[in-house]
Length: 97
Image 1 (cartoon, rainbow, N blue to C red):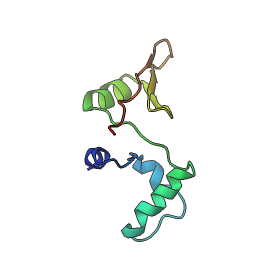
Image 2 (cartoon, rainbow, N blue to C red):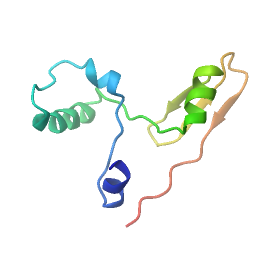
Image 3 (spheres, one colour):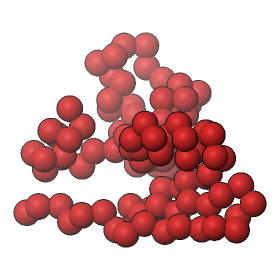
């Protein structure tokens, strides 16, 4: 659904469920949830996440102990446990239109 909405021109954000779960003021009804979440994102209470394939998520992050940060410009920065290797991604592809 995320990619379909993005293809239709919507600005989509993938939020970390653990982060959202602990925010105060969450509505009791699902119908109010998206509006509340959008407001949280606009005021900076929710950060966007990055999608990783199983290999990069399980092996590189969990087993090898790398840290990955999603930067505000959409790029990622990653480093190993002892910070002797630092990697920077390229910028995300331009949006069509």
